[in-house]
Length: 141
Image 1: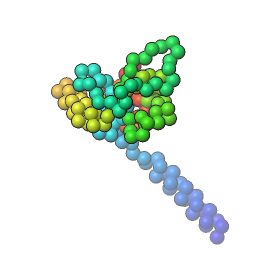
Image 2: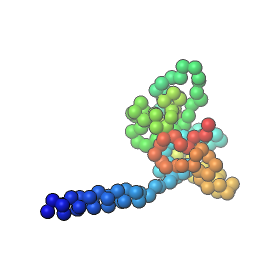
Image 3: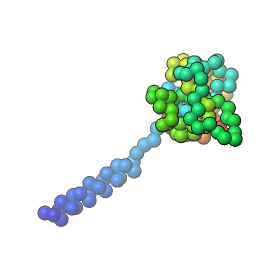
Image 4: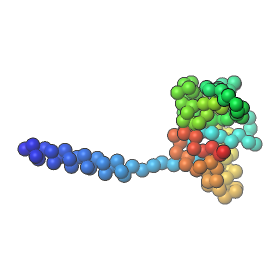
């Protein structure tokens, strides 16, 4: 009985390991609704911001960083100290763009610009991972 129970447990453990190995990733690019991360404002209209002043968690001692514009999930801007490391932006002055501006102004214009150039959103910009998890992989250095 004990041997049968142990075999059953071992089979369940092996099956769960195989199921975990079959995880499928989802890719979200700049210009899509689920994207969170850095935005290149460039020639875009002035963004609508969550806060008027930039937020800086750890001022850099020797380097003065240019401000960055970020779209972050709800709650990240409010608790920025807990999330800035995910975006590699704790030392940067950060402006948080409003979701409405991103969805209504930035994303449509970004998609249209890249459609005209024959680019795919995310291709050739940053690392192209675009997983939407806000870890700052979309930035150019």
